[in-house]
Image (cartoon, rainbow, N blue to C red):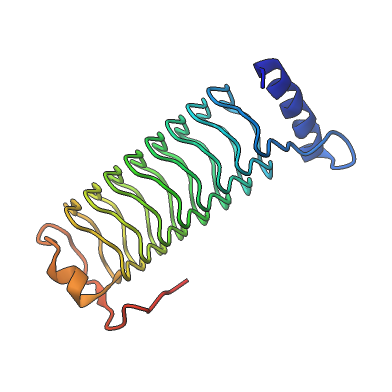
Length: 216
């Protein structure tokens, strides 16, 4: 899809956001927007299911409650993007730049965030059950109350991150860096804690005896 065609859809979507009787809700389902420029665009409630957004420029974009399930956002630039409440289940965000992005209450269950950068991101109460976060940078990321059950966080950098009250039941944290990480009230299984170096982390985790204990 050409950039001009994208811009036309964005203009109609802007009208729809102001008054649903005018304009038209953006629907990019299964379209190819790879490397498109969507920076600063307001795509709140836009439909982008299975959309190819590989390498897209989306810094500062507003994607509140947008539908991005199964979308390909690998290598996309989402720096400072607003993704509050966005639907990103099973999306590919590998190598994406989410520095400073707002992912609060977003659904990233089963999403691929391997080698993504989420430094300084706001991700309070984000849903990341069974997500892949291998090698991801989560330094100073706010993950308070996040659902990370079954997430693979092998070699992830969680230094200075806030994981207080996060649910890490069944999470894989092999090789994860937890320097000055806040684990206050975080739900961790005893076997997981035993294999972690939490000597430089702080806060008392809430030990769970049941591997099946998943808190929403």
